[in-house]
Length: 196
Image (cartoon, rainbow, N blue to C red; front, side, top):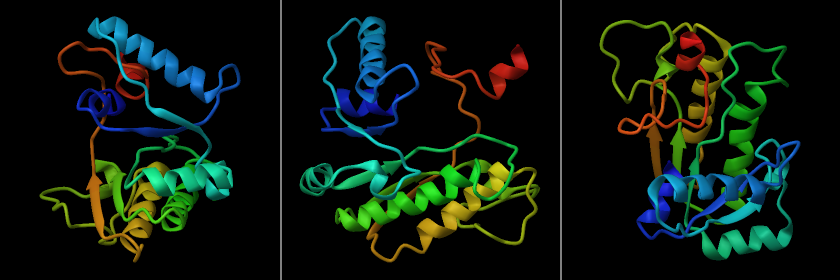
């Protein structure tokens, strides 16, 4: 949805995408773009696809790709995350993606001289707190229901401590369940698991 909306507004977009076991990063993005073209009934521009992984240093990109990013990108929207609520340890998910991956993205931004950062977190960084919770509240000693919530607050704290950023925006959505008008969704986690 985010890529679709940005492209429809005329923004130049580059996406970092992991290949799956069966499809390259380019194939995954192309499938998404063709789906949007079919739904919307219009041709869509394509984003620049960078094959990489936030769990790797330099996001798994080559020196030439890093140079391209530094010359062509001014902002990052960090939306990659593990939604795992269970873990086998700090070197496994969700810590691997949500904490270590965030560190890699920030390090990459510093290397590529990107100073505008948009971080997608979660409303559940509030943990098990009740009552009014302000947006500026981060770590106030709250308890957490699971390792996902705890990993996301740790990631927020890391981002807030990144001195190289001059523009920083946090987004804390609740459960994302699909398009509010068409009901289209690309994942079937959380709410949809309950319906099954």
